[in-house]
Image 1: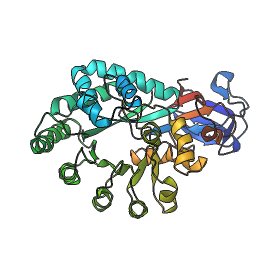
Image 2 (image 1 turned 90 degrees about the horizontal axis):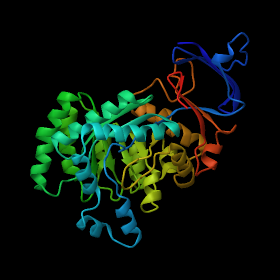
Image 3 (image 1 turned 135 degrees about the horizontal axis):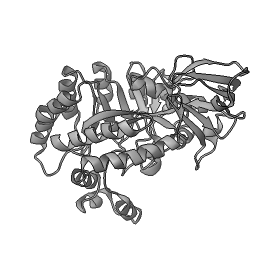
Amino acid sequence: MTETRIVNAIVDGNPADIVIDDGKIAEGGERNHAGASEKTVFDAGGRAVLPGFVDCHTHACFAGSRLDEWERKLAGASYLELMEAGGGIMATVRATRKASETELAELLLTRLNRMLAHGSTTVEVKSGYGLDTGNELKMLRAIARAGESFPGTVIPTACIGHAIDPDNDHDRFIRRTIDETLPAITAEFPGIALDAYCEKGAWSLDDCLALFDAGQAAGHPIRVHADQFNALGMIEAAVERGFASVDHLEATDGSGLRTLAGSRTFGVMLPASGFHLDDRYGDGRAFIDAGGRLALGTNYNPGSAPCWSMPFVVALAVRRLGLTPAEAIHASTAAGAELLGLPDRGRIAPGMRADLLVLDCADARSLAFEFGGNPVARVMVGGHWTK
């Protein structure tokens, strides 16, 4: 690969040149590019350069639309009424079950490229709209297939505890997921992270822990949706069992945040959900002040967070979670990379993968200050420009 230089850039508020060699950052900070070919030099023109965003929590693989359902909600329909009319997550499950693996992969790739244009160079994507062995495997294969055509990096997660299929007996459904779906996932996707939604009306604490204990025994890292609407005790269990992350945290009180902050388990906050649903947000300020490891994600999904923009999430995190712009950027880059087990990205430093963004402004704080558009002017993935 030809060496590339990004010159006249602003990195961490300071003028810097960035040298990329073989897809990695070779050196930085030197403002001397004498002798470099014009073809290999990109002049950032005094604009800010950031690491590519790492969107560590999405449900971007799905079929169907919930737009009509949302319009009925705006007109006053309750969630129960929508569910009784066939809406909610099961509407997406039915559409996703009908879609082929090829269709799901094509839909996902379109969304991934839209996310890439807004700066997300690494994207985690969960299954969870299959709710049976065959359809969960279909989703994970589609995620892998889309990832092969995506310029950036796709990290799959097996969210096999996303919901309870109302057409099945509850206890039999839980046992089938643990005894049939989990072993099938382990066989085809060994070491993939497992996830479940611990909430009233979804998977109970005991159901989640039964799944997770079996998953950990089979070598899977554990992530969990918890405390979105109700705190059911998952924080303490996650810390005790060493889960990778607890995601949502809107309903977590100060004691729960301190407990999580005192562990190595990441807290992942998803402010786009609060913006779209009910104006409830996790207390990011308290979590960071307690020493917590905070990451941010879009939670991109067809129902509760139809948002693919990490720049918008950064803006929300500053306004609603109490973060500084620098903290929000860190939580959207380096923290997400660490959570996903990718220590080669998320920072601009020698040896790091050259996943970089050129903003359309000189001051990176503008990323949080301005909102409603796309502030990303250029995107580099692995040393190659994609935008």
